[in-house]
Amino acid sequence: MASSAVGYAGFIATAAIVGLLASEVSGGDLLAGLPAAAGTLGTAAAAAPLAFRARRVGRRRAITLGYLVGIVGAVLAVGAGQTQQFWLLVVAMVVFGVANASNLQSRFAAADLATDEGRAGAIAMVVWMGTIGAVLGPTAAPWLNRLGVGAGMESWVSPIFLSMIGFALAAAITTRFLRPDPLEVAGGVDPEARFENPLSGLRRSWAAIWPRPRARLAVAAMAVSQMAMVAVMTMTPLHMRDHGHADLSTMVIAVHVLGMYGLSPLVGRWADRFGRVTMLGVGAGILALGTITAVIAGYVPALVFLGLFLLGLGWSFALISGSALLTESLPVEERPGSQGLADVAMSVLGAVAAFSSGFVKEMAGYHWLANFATVAAILTVIAAGSLSGRQTRTVV
Image (cartoon, rainbow, N blue to C red; front, side, top):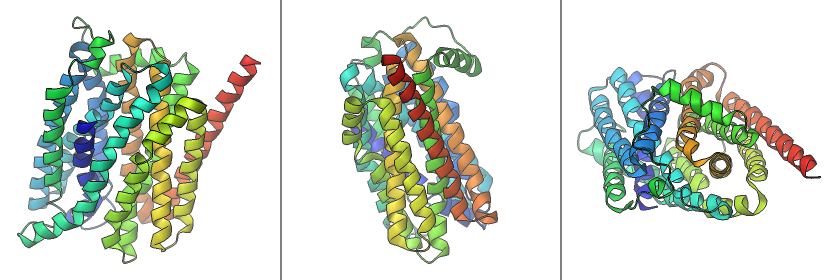
């Protein structure tokens, strides 16, 4: 829980401002989503290797490695911002994104030893602790930016230093206190596991997921919610800047992140009580409501705040319910690889959304991003309702 707090602080501190930094470095909004997409691709590329490392040596060493690599990415990002090199910023964000793979794996560390009745709640508590850092990051970004600019740094570079500090603390806390290793205690560590190239490992994990409808729904719901959330979130600061509210944009992201993490304990409790599939459908409905609010908000900041909060809350339902559903749908030896596949799917769709968001905003408008996200969320509601209905008929 402690490493999650500082780890998410490190990640969100840069994620909240990378669109603004990219716009400054590239000279426009057209490619502003590319560095965010690169960061998500970095997460996707690291998810399977870190999951395999966890299978071989445990959660502690795998999660720590991701945070250390993320520090290198943050250093490169500072260099890119200071030298105004857009290509270097893209490369830096790929490396930076590896740390978020560790953030995501931390929720599965909570699931390793949880009971079926309390698994969603255990995941939720780790996710909830991310609220502290995730809200702190974007809230502190404007102050850090003013401080950095006053010291002679380029605009929106200095908040990245918070990422370095957060990742370093997360690595230290994990190394020192995640003992004994939860995956080892659960019997999921195999030091003799045969090395697989990432693609072969992903194919094997997909073969384990595909015959299980609940596991398929869990992966799909988490990936689709990530795609919808990233597409709208990435361009919201630029949308607000276009209408004279740039100073409020980081606060909107803070409220959005509060929606992502702040109500996690309640979401976990509801998922344990009412069922994972039901809560996946509820979460997708909330996400759709958030994107619809963003569309009708026009230029009213208060409605943008509400829409982004609901967007984050819907994502929280998908992450917590989907993570619990996936974990309990698989035998313990298949969990690390399949969990890695889920994170790959989330990250790849998130990267596609981030990369395309700048083009969609530039050519069609911000509202079309929200429209696409609404459609994706509604399809998830239908899928969850269909599976729930089949299960009910089977029981009857």
